Amino acid sequence: MGSTGVRIAIDAMGGDNAPSEIVAGALRAVEELGVKVLLVGSPEDIERTLPSSIKSEQVEIVPAEGAIAMDEEPLSGIRRKPKASINVAMSLVKKGQADAVVSAGHSGAAMAAALLRLGRLPGIDRPAIGAVFPTMVASKQVLVLDVGANVDCRPKFLEQFAVLGSAYSQYVLGVAEPKVGLLNIGEEECKGNDVAIRAHQMISKNTQVTFIGNAEGRDVLSGNFDVIVCDGFVGNVLLKFAEAVGDIMLQIIREELPQGLRGQLGCSILKPNLKRIKQRVDSAEHGGGLLLGVNGICVIGHGSSQAPSIFGAIRLAKEAVDNQVLQRIHSNNLSEKSVL
Image (cartoon, rainbow, N blue to C red):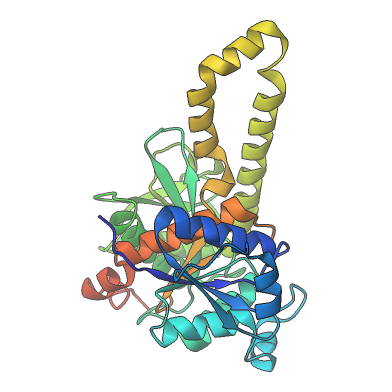
């Protein structure tokens, strides 16, 4: 049984579809997950998107002034706009008025705001965004990190990602002994660039993770790995490519299965199966990635997120709170033991 009364600060002004889709996803989360949402942003803009019937104590509007635009430099943007929605949302977590923050706005700004207001976990140089992918094994998922926070990485950053990813996989995804792989162009430990070779050496010596070696691109969704580590440049490309493949697959199913009388009959029979397929491959079901390595729960969604993705991001944040991710990392000293 999860905790009750989880409070999620929502960056209502962040994203291409803010605030309407952000608010719609938040209201669904209130209804289905029982969370309290703090909608951070322009009260006038937010109120215009709220149904007149909403009088729930589970929905609160927290005033903020503006947002960080996608074309702004992250650090200068959050410093020039201290009352921007992402800054106010992070401050709510810092002050203990919220348990987690969700944003579909500028991911770089979200990370910068998290670092400045929440700080890093001990022993962690760079936080990483972790995203959950489906695999060929129906009951198994794989956590990939980093998927966008750090374009360039040093070997020790990748080692720290392995430690953080292993902890998340164990405590949230329920994997007893997560198998960790390093994304590379070959299975041999001598393959790849200098960063990959040195990272392999460092992770293989780290007793906090179960490292089973390099993972090639074809291995990511095989189900043989529980955690895949890579830099944010490669991870972001991988994430968006995988999502596009999932979207194409769903579109092909929608177009081809209903063809003809047999197809229409088959669709009605297979409806439960098709729903499960959608749940496994639809990126909206996952909603975003957890920013691992900062001293707070922060979920970063896609800029194009619509209501279902926002709902998924809030669900992910609630799961992280319910499973006490930060407390478990601290109690096990996982971050403090990371080799620097």
